[in-house]
Length: 335
Image 1 (tube, rainbow, N blue to C red):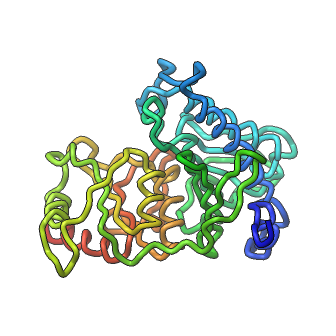
Image 2: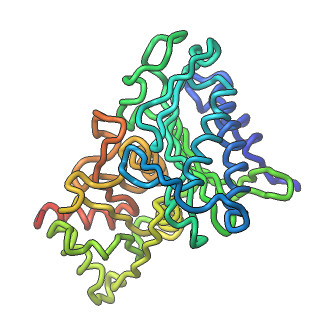
Protein backbone atom coordinates (compact mmCIF):
# COMPACT_ATOMS: atom_id res chain seq x y z
CA UNK A 1 0.00 0.00 0.00
CA UNK A 2 3.09 2.24 -0.11
CA UNK A 3 2.48 5.52 -1.91
CA UNK A 4 -1.32 5.19 -1.79
CA UNK A 5 -2.99 8.19 -0.22
CA UNK A 6 -6.48 8.30 1.26
CA UNK A 7 -8.85 11.26 1.03
CA UNK A 8 -8.45 11.86 4.77
CA UNK A 9 -4.66 11.90 4.54
CA UNK A 10 -4.78 14.20 1.52
CA UNK A 11 -7.09 16.67 3.27
CA UNK A 12 -4.81 16.85 6.31
CA UNK A 13 -1.78 17.30 4.05
CA UNK A 14 -3.48 20.16 2.17
CA UNK A 15 -5.00 21.84 5.23
CA UNK A 16 -2.81 24.91 4.69
CA UNK A 17 -4.58 25.51 1.34
CA UNK A 18 -7.70 26.59 3.23
CA UNK A 19 -7.20 30.25 3.95
CA UNK A 20 -9.48 30.50 6.99
CA UNK A 21 -10.17 26.94 8.05
CA UNK A 22 -8.85 25.26 11.17
CA UNK A 23 -10.21 21.79 10.48
CA UNK A 24 -13.79 22.73 9.60
CA UNK A 25 -13.45 22.02 5.88
CA UNK A 26 -11.88 18.65 6.60
CA UNK A 27 -14.85 17.80 8.82
CA UNK A 28 -17.29 18.97 6.13
CA UNK A 29 -15.57 16.66 3.66
CA UNK A 30 -15.78 13.92 6.27
CA UNK A 31 -19.56 14.36 6.36
CA UNK A 32 -19.76 14.36 2.54
CA UNK A 33 -17.62 11.24 2.44
CA UNK A 34 -19.87 9.46 4.97
CA UNK A 35 -23.13 10.42 3.25
CA UNK A 36 -21.79 9.48 -0.19
CA UNK A 37 -20.84 6.01 1.08
CA UNK A 38 -24.39 5.51 2.35
CA UNK A 39 -25.92 6.77 -0.91
CA UNK A 40 -23.50 4.60 -2.91
CA UNK A 41 -24.67 1.55 -0.98
CA UNK A 42 -28.33 2.32 -1.76
CA UNK A 43 -27.62 3.09 -5.42
CA UNK A 44 -25.86 -0.25 -5.79
CA UNK A 45 -28.81 -2.19 -4.40
CA UNK A 46 -31.50 -0.02 -6.01
CA UNK A 47 -32.76 -2.87 -8.18
CA UNK A 48 -33.11 -5.17 -5.15
CA UNK A 49 -34.83 -2.81 -2.73
CA UNK A 50 -37.89 -0.59 -2.80
CA UNK A 51 -35.77 2.49 -3.37
CA UNK A 52 -36.31 3.18 -7.08
CA UNK A 53 -39.26 4.90 -8.68
CA UNK A 54 -41.16 8.11 -8.03
CA UNK A 55 -42.45 9.42 -4.71
CA UNK A 56 -45.45 11.09 -6.33
CA UNK A 57 -44.30 14.44 -4.89
CA UNK A 58 -43.00 17.36 -6.98
CA UNK A 59 -40.03 19.46 -5.86
CA UNK A 60 -39.77 23.24 -6.22
CA UNK A 61 -38.60 22.74 -9.82
CA UNK A 62 -41.90 21.10 -10.73
CA UNK A 63 -40.10 17.77 -11.17
CA UNK A 64 -41.42 14.55 -9.66
CA UNK A 65 -39.00 13.46 -6.95
CA UNK A 66 -37.45 10.01 -7.12
CA UNK A 67 -37.23 7.96 -3.92
CA UNK A 68 -33.44 8.06 -4.08
CA UNK A 69 -33.52 11.87 -4.50
CA UNK A 70 -35.27 12.16 -1.15
CA UNK A 71 -33.05 9.51 0.48
CA UNK A 72 -29.84 11.24 -0.67
CA UNK A 73 -31.13 14.63 0.45
CA UNK A 74 -31.93 13.29 3.91
CA UNK A 75 -28.57 11.51 4.35
CA UNK A 76 -26.47 14.52 3.37
CA UNK A 77 -28.59 16.77 5.60
CA UNK A 78 -28.17 14.42 8.56
CA UNK A 79 -24.42 14.00 8.14
CA UNK A 80 -23.79 17.73 7.85
CA UNK A 81 -26.19 18.72 10.65
CA UNK A 82 -24.47 16.42 13.16
CA UNK A 83 -20.98 17.80 12.45
CA UNK A 84 -22.05 21.37 13.17
CA UNK A 85 -19.54 22.98 10.80
CA UNK A 86 -22.20 24.32 8.44
CA UNK A 87 -24.91 26.65 9.70
CA UNK A 88 -27.28 25.81 6.87
CA UNK A 89 -27.85 23.94 3.62
CA UNK A 90 -29.47 24.83 0.33
CA UNK A 91 -30.70 21.81 -1.61
CA UNK A 92 -32.21 21.48 -5.05
CA UNK A 93 -34.83 19.24 -3.45
CA UNK A 94 -35.95 21.87 -0.90
CA UNK A 95 -38.16 24.89 -1.55
CA UNK A 96 -36.07 27.07 0.77
CA UNK A 97 -32.71 26.84 2.52
CA UNK A 98 -32.50 24.95 5.81
CA UNK A 99 -30.95 26.85 8.73
CA UNK A 100 -29.69 24.49 11.44
CA UNK A 101 -30.95 25.58 14.85
CA UNK A 102 -28.50 24.01 17.31
CA UNK A 103 -26.11 26.40 19.04
CA UNK A 104 -23.18 24.39 17.68
CA UNK A 105 -24.46 24.75 14.09
CA UNK A 106 -25.16 28.47 14.51
CA UNK A 107 -21.44 28.84 15.21
CA UNK A 108 -20.62 27.13 11.91
CA UNK A 109 -18.62 29.31 9.51
CA UNK A 110 -19.89 27.73 6.29
CA UNK A 111 -22.99 27.00 4.24
CA UNK A 112 -23.31 24.18 1.73
CA UNK A 113 -25.41 23.99 -1.44
CA UNK A 114 -26.06 20.69 -3.18
CA UNK A 115 -27.85 18.69 -5.79
CA UNK A 116 -28.07 15.50 -3.72
CA UNK A 117 -28.71 13.22 -6.69
CA UNK A 118 -28.08 14.63 -10.16
CA UNK A 119 -29.39 12.60 -13.08
CA UNK A 120 -31.84 10.69 -10.90
CA UNK A 121 -34.11 9.97 -13.89
CA UNK A 122 -31.40 7.46 -14.87
CA UNK A 123 -31.68 5.45 -11.64
CA UNK A 124 -34.12 2.88 -12.98
CA UNK A 125 -31.92 2.09 -15.99
CA UNK A 126 -28.61 1.71 -14.12
CA UNK A 127 -26.84 4.71 -15.67
CA UNK A 128 -24.26 6.80 -13.76
CA UNK A 129 -25.66 9.47 -11.44
CA UNK A 130 -24.01 11.79 -8.95
CA UNK A 131 -24.01 14.30 -6.09
CA UNK A 132 -22.85 17.90 -6.63
CA UNK A 133 -21.82 20.18 -3.74
CA UNK A 134 -20.57 23.70 -3.16
CA UNK A 135 -19.23 25.36 0.03
CA UNK A 136 -19.17 29.08 0.90
CA UNK A 137 -18.10 31.04 3.97
CA UNK A 138 -21.17 32.54 5.55
CA UNK A 139 -21.59 36.34 5.38
CA UNK A 140 -23.98 36.62 8.35
CA UNK A 141 -22.82 36.90 11.94
CA UNK A 142 -21.43 33.74 13.48
CA UNK A 143 -23.65 32.51 16.33
CA UNK A 144 -26.88 33.43 14.54
CA UNK A 145 -29.02 31.34 12.18
CA UNK A 146 -28.10 31.25 8.47
CA UNK A 147 -29.83 33.81 6.26
CA UNK A 148 -30.62 33.93 2.54
CA UNK A 149 -27.61 36.16 1.83
CA UNK A 150 -25.29 33.38 2.97
CA UNK A 151 -26.41 31.32 -0.02
CA UNK A 152 -26.85 34.02 -2.69
CA UNK A 153 -23.14 34.56 -3.33
CA UNK A 154 -21.22 34.71 -6.60
CA UNK A 155 -19.50 31.52 -7.65
CA UNK A 156 -16.05 33.13 -7.30
CA UNK A 157 -16.62 33.15 -3.54
CA UNK A 158 -16.81 29.36 -3.29
CA UNK A 159 -14.18 27.87 -0.98
CA UNK A 160 -14.76 24.30 -2.13
CA UNK A 161 -16.80 22.42 -4.71
CA UNK A 162 -17.00 18.91 -6.05
CA UNK A 163 -19.07 15.94 -7.04
CA UNK A 164 -19.43 12.26 -6.33
CA UNK A 165 -20.12 10.03 -9.33
CA UNK A 166 -21.81 6.68 -8.69
CA UNK A 167 -20.84 4.61 -11.71
CA UNK A 168 -18.78 1.53 -12.58
CA UNK A 169 -16.65 2.82 -9.73
CA UNK A 170 -17.55 5.56 -7.27
CA UNK A 171 -15.36 8.67 -7.33
CA UNK A 172 -15.21 11.92 -5.39
CA UNK A 173 -13.69 14.84 -7.32
CA UNK A 174 -13.15 18.20 -5.61
CA UNK A 175 -11.31 21.51 -5.57
CA UNK A 176 -10.57 24.11 -2.92
CA UNK A 177 -9.00 26.49 -5.44
CA UNK A 178 -5.64 24.74 -5.72
CA UNK A 179 -6.34 22.35 -8.58
CA UNK A 180 -8.68 19.38 -8.99
CA UNK A 181 -8.12 15.94 -7.49
CA UNK A 182 -10.11 12.70 -7.83
CA UNK A 183 -10.50 9.87 -5.33
CA UNK A 184 -11.85 6.39 -6.09
CA UNK A 185 -13.88 4.51 -3.49
CA UNK A 186 -12.78 1.05 -2.34
CA UNK A 187 -16.02 -0.49 -1.03
CA UNK A 188 -14.20 -3.43 0.55
CA UNK A 189 -12.77 -1.16 3.27
CA UNK A 190 -14.89 1.96 2.85
CA UNK A 191 -12.05 4.32 1.90
CA UNK A 192 -11.54 6.86 -0.91
CA UNK A 193 -8.02 6.68 -2.43
CA UNK A 194 -6.30 9.37 -4.51
CA UNK A 195 -6.48 7.98 -8.04
CA UNK A 196 -6.56 11.08 -10.26
CA UNK A 197 -4.18 13.76 -8.91
CA UNK A 198 -4.01 17.22 -10.48
CA UNK A 199 -6.74 16.69 -13.07
CA UNK A 200 -6.41 18.90 -16.16
CA UNK A 201 -8.92 18.93 -19.04
CA UNK A 202 -7.34 18.73 -22.53
CA UNK A 203 -7.33 22.10 -24.29
CA UNK A 204 -9.53 20.63 -27.01
CA UNK A 205 -11.36 17.36 -27.62
CA UNK A 206 -13.68 15.57 -30.01
CA UNK A 207 -16.77 15.04 -27.86
CA UNK A 208 -19.80 17.32 -27.76
CA UNK A 209 -22.57 16.68 -25.23
CA UNK A 210 -26.00 18.19 -25.82
CA UNK A 211 -29.56 16.90 -25.91
CA UNK A 212 -30.11 17.05 -29.67
CA UNK A 213 -33.71 15.97 -29.18
CA UNK A 214 -34.38 19.61 -28.31
CA UNK A 215 -32.60 20.90 -31.44
CA UNK A 216 -35.68 22.63 -32.83
CA UNK A 217 -35.95 24.72 -29.64
CA UNK A 218 -32.29 25.88 -29.58
CA UNK A 219 -31.01 29.36 -30.54
CA UNK A 220 -29.52 29.66 -34.04
CA UNK A 221 -25.96 29.97 -32.73
CA UNK A 222 -26.22 26.64 -30.92
CA UNK A 223 -27.78 24.98 -33.98
CA UNK A 224 -24.91 26.26 -36.13
CA UNK A 225 -22.33 24.98 -33.63
CA UNK A 226 -23.92 21.52 -33.63
CA UNK A 227 -23.69 21.42 -37.43
CA UNK A 228 -20.05 22.55 -37.16
CA UNK A 229 -19.38 19.58 -34.83
CA UNK A 230 -20.94 17.23 -37.39
CA UNK A 231 -19.09 18.49 -40.46
CA UNK A 232 -16.10 16.60 -41.85
CA UNK A 233 -12.77 18.41 -41.58
CA UNK A 234 -9.51 16.47 -41.30
CA UNK A 235 -7.50 19.41 -39.97
CA UNK A 236 -9.76 19.92 -36.95
CA UNK A 237 -10.51 16.19 -36.50
CA UNK A 238 -14.19 16.59 -37.24
CA UNK A 239 -16.82 15.27 -37.16
CA UNK A 240 -16.82 15.14 -33.39
CA UNK A 241 -18.47 12.36 -31.44
CA UNK A 242 -21.85 13.09 -29.84
CA UNK A 243 -22.14 11.72 -26.29
CA UNK A 244 -25.04 12.70 -24.04
CA UNK A 245 -25.89 10.69 -20.91
CA UNK A 246 -28.49 13.00 -19.38
CA UNK A 247 -26.58 13.20 -16.10
CA UNK A 248 -24.49 16.37 -15.76
CA UNK A 249 -22.01 14.68 -13.43
CA UNK A 250 -21.43 11.77 -15.81
CA UNK A 251 -21.12 13.94 -18.93
CA UNK A 252 -18.85 16.42 -17.12
CA UNK A 253 -16.63 13.66 -15.70
CA UNK A 254 -16.10 12.03 -19.10
CA UNK A 255 -15.29 15.34 -20.77
CA UNK A 256 -12.96 16.38 -17.94
CA UNK A 257 -10.88 13.26 -18.54
CA UNK A 258 -11.10 12.98 -22.32
CA UNK A 259 -11.69 16.59 -23.43
CA UNK A 260 -14.99 17.87 -24.77
CA UNK A 261 -17.81 20.38 -24.38
CA UNK A 262 -21.14 20.11 -22.57
CA UNK A 263 -23.93 22.50 -23.54
CA UNK A 264 -27.33 23.02 -21.95
CA UNK A 265 -28.48 26.22 -23.66
CA UNK A 266 -31.49 28.43 -23.24
CA UNK A 267 -34.30 27.45 -25.58
CA UNK A 268 -37.87 28.27 -26.48
CA UNK A 269 -38.87 25.68 -23.85
CA UNK A 270 -36.51 27.08 -21.18
CA UNK A 271 -35.75 30.76 -22.01
CA UNK A 272 -33.41 31.16 -19.01
CA UNK A 273 -31.81 27.74 -19.36
CA UNK A 274 -32.66 24.71 -17.24
CA UNK A 275 -29.69 24.03 -14.98
CA UNK A 276 -29.51 25.69 -11.56
CA UNK A 277 -26.79 28.28 -11.00
CA UNK A 278 -26.22 27.54 -7.32
CA UNK A 279 -26.64 23.77 -7.18
CA UNK A 280 -25.11 22.68 -10.50
CA UNK A 281 -23.45 25.39 -12.59
CA UNK A 282 -21.35 27.23 -9.98
CA UNK A 283 -19.69 24.13 -8.48
CA UNK A 284 -19.03 22.61 -11.91
CA UNK A 285 -17.68 25.94 -13.19
CA UNK A 286 -15.29 26.21 -10.23
CA UNK A 287 -14.02 22.71 -10.95
CA UNK A 288 -13.72 23.36 -14.68
CA UNK A 289 -11.77 26.59 -14.30
CA UNK A 290 -9.45 24.93 -11.80
CA UNK A 291 -8.88 22.13 -14.34
CA UNK A 292 -7.97 24.61 -17.09
CA UNK A 293 -11.31 24.74 -18.89
CA UNK A 294 -14.04 27.35 -19.38
CA UNK A 295 -17.60 27.64 -18.07
CA UNK A 296 -19.99 30.31 -19.33
CA UNK A 297 -23.64 31.01 -20.08
CA UNK A 298 -22.62 31.59 -23.70
CA UNK A 299 -21.34 35.10 -22.93
CA UNK A 300 -20.43 35.58 -19.26
CA UNK A 301 -18.29 33.44 -17.00
CA UNK A 302 -20.64 31.38 -14.81
CA UNK A 303 -18.65 32.32 -11.70
CA UNK A 304 -19.32 36.04 -12.30
CA UNK A 305 -23.12 35.76 -12.56
CA UNK A 306 -24.88 37.41 -9.57
CA UNK A 307 -27.09 35.02 -7.62
CA UNK A 308 -30.62 36.39 -7.17
CA UNK A 309 -32.66 33.31 -6.29
CA UNK A 310 -31.98 29.93 -4.73
CA UNK A 311 -33.37 28.12 -7.78
CA UNK A 312 -32.09 30.53 -10.44
CA UNK A 313 -31.52 28.90 -13.83
CA UNK A 314 -28.87 29.73 -16.42
CA UNK A 315 -27.59 28.31 -19.72
CA UNK A 316 -24.32 26.36 -19.49
CA UNK A 317 -21.41 26.00 -21.93
CA UNK A 318 -18.61 24.12 -20.16
CA UNK A 319 -15.53 22.16 -21.17
CA UNK A 320 -12.27 22.33 -23.08
CA UNK A 321 -11.04 25.90 -23.65
CA UNK A 322 -10.86 25.87 -27.45
CA UNK A 323 -14.21 24.12 -27.87
CA UNK A 324 -16.08 26.56 -25.65
CA UNK A 325 -14.41 29.51 -27.38
CA UNK A 326 -15.52 28.15 -30.78
CA UNK A 327 -19.09 27.75 -29.50
CA UNK A 328 -18.94 31.39 -28.33
CA UNK A 329 -18.06 32.49 -31.86
CA UNK A 330 -21.26 30.93 -33.21
CA UNK A 331 -23.40 32.36 -30.40
CA UNK A 332 -21.91 35.83 -30.92
CA UNK A 333 -22.54 35.72 -34.68
CA UNK A 334 -25.91 33.99 -34.88
CA UNK A 335 -27.43 34.47 -31.42
